[in-house]
Image (cartoon, rainbow, N blue to C red; front, side, top):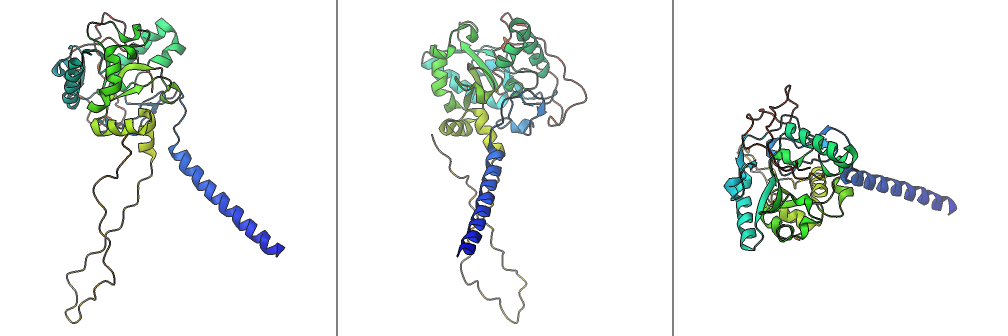
Length: 321
């Protein structure tokens, strides 16, 4: 009996080791990486990946990433001198109108920034605050969500730059955005108390457009945008239910094929599975030029051989971090 018990114990230990090993592999595949300084090209970096691109202190875009469909924020009923990608305008306009109706009128502090503009912006804050402090509140060139053309730094209409407030999130405009922006596809990238997972300090004015469906999922998940995008990027692809093989049309005429013993399983549904309902903190840069840069390279997913043309920056306020 002792020999049998020992054998069972060995088998049990092996099973435990295999189980925990598999679990560890799954966890390590989806665990959010720690914030660290690096210059790794982000995996999802084409123009079509705008709402799933991960940008933080480690992952970056190419130097030549420059969307060719930029439009003035004036098209959304906001002050001009800033640009966002064309598909952002409709929801941005709807949000601006709703905020105004609620007495929380908005204005733009900063929107799209090219690689070269962000390089100048980070250099400015490094001179003003020191390199270490700048890393906490400003993105290095290539690491900024503003380069996507889908991110806006807001301020109160008629107000000063939002970082001059003790907490702009407590102003009427800031509080309205925190409560309602997700309904229009915008998510606050760097919420309060989450610097350890977003990699940047709290920025209640920095909102990234990810579209209404994704924004609703991020909100219901309770995760920060960086956490949500990382889980989506690293989640294993589900194995689809196999579709039964069709009966061949050239069956022998002598003897028909016999019908299957049971009804074939139905093909997998095309509808997505339901989900629960429920970064560098970039200080707002007082915008740059209204002029659009040259058209983007044909393949933004690879590093171009030449740097993009520099943007002219004309701003009375200090650049947003």
